[in-house]
Image (cartoon, rainbow, N blue to C red; front, side, top):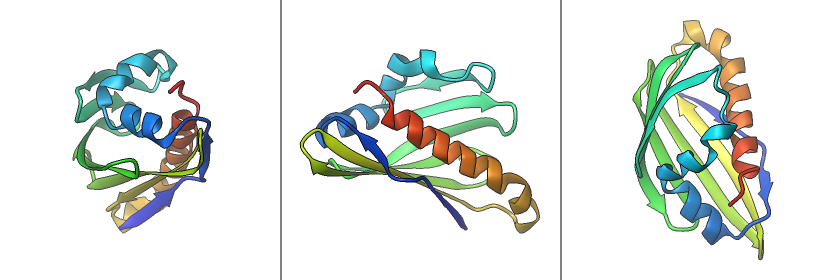
Length: 136
């Protein structure tokens, strides 16, 4: 298993507001226009799951399997070439100041690790930055 962790991101909203938004995947619809159309297509989602198609990795799906109120949202892959677990961790340092860290754990075969590590690291960083920039 290999972990990919984002830098800690600062979100200028309360942890309650951020958690409420991120723990319902229906909210993807509110930010769909900000997603890169040339890399993500066939986006389907509901409250607990989402799936999309990418050029690099094909169709990938995620399902929320755990919500620890105001702290953690845990997702697992459903349609993926390798098993993936993802955690969104939230900490409120002050009112209207939430810190977010995104961790992705993937079971990447050793022979592919060198090829995919950099794109995954970059993707985790971009997703965390995008989550931090949302209008909660």
